[in-house]
Image (cartoon, rainbow, N blue to C red; front, side, top):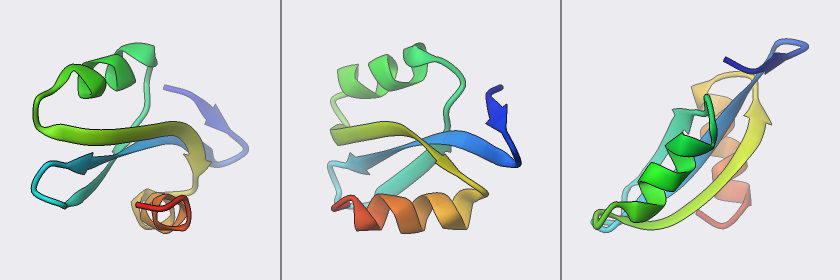
Length: 64
């Protein structure tokens, strides 16, 4: 787990049904797996956020 001064790494993805998902990032395999999924339209990250709500806020500012 990556943690820097109270912040954690997260990644976001758009599900093909239009839902935004944010998940904790642990290693590049997380993003690689999401990109390979037939159910994922777009992936972004990793980025730092305090918690899940903050990660959603950041993802939305990044165009999700």
